[in-house]
Image (cartoon, rainbow, N blue to C red; front, side):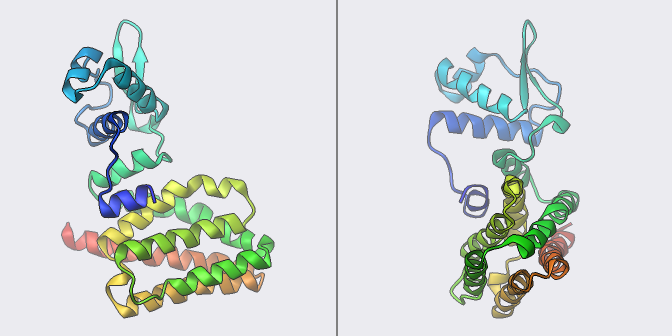
Length: 245
């Protein structure tokens, strides 16, 4: 499941390349290597991670592609400012979530979801095929399964939102998958609807309202129903974060 599964269940990668990318990337995101700093040279990093220079170079290329670092001739590899980071990258978002959940980050994610997911629902109300609508109903019904744990419910929830994006028939909507996963990871990690029967029922009903509006070809209602779902999850997480502050 990627970002969502790794955040909720702590799944780990096993290749040397992936381990270097994860460990070094996380250190950059949490500030161990602050913006503007120069990373240790290849020899030192190879010894630190116990990998060959070839593996290290490939890992550095991966981190550069995420805009976390930039190699500079006669200077070394520089850690870039966070405004340059690719925050749509699933790894970068996961490391940011793992660094600690805070109200500002949650609010920023919610703002981004509100900017495009309601429009995806509205587009789905205009364009979705009967087959896509039937699939959305089936997924919404699965949300009420009493046997869900937080992880399994989160997976079905994510599937629902991705299918709404697909039903919009706008290929760009799928580009924001990592944002949805990060928001759901925060929401379900802090306070999951799966913890109570009432929470499961409300989750299913709220998502079913989105499908009903799509089926009715009611763009405004689809948009509002999606906003309600986004805000409900964000509000639940915000209350928990506030209690922990």
